[in-house]
Length: 187
Image (tube, rainbow, N blue to C red; front, side):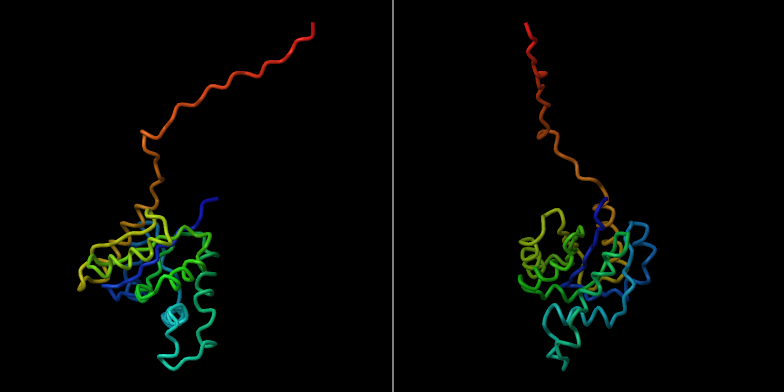
């Protein structure tokens, strides 16, 4: 059985979240990606949990604990490829990024990073230490791009990840012929 695919959109240049992508649900669905039905407050709590910023807004750890795990359980239950927009995850350091991805083990996770500046390149380098290169997508969008622009770029990623990987022809080797096993015939 094929793994479910997740496209995780992280910033840094676009602060477009899941709620804003809602208007472009059909565009994403045409690319085979479905928006996860989750409340904005739950996404915010998950962000606070994983980035450990809950104290900055006066929350206790128990207020946010398990938020990301609950969201990922929905991903596991679904039988479709999903897109989740968490722009704040661009601020994750290497340890936090590893923890975010740890909850997604078993899913074919693709990370889409918006921007082409030095900050976006640095973020891409950080996440590249944790993901195969084919699962990391840097989207060249301007800082003032609209939600439709992000949805179109994510749809492009959705089409790209659905194409099966093809081995380069130069790496194909002819099969070795194996001689049939010889048996002794009694004399």
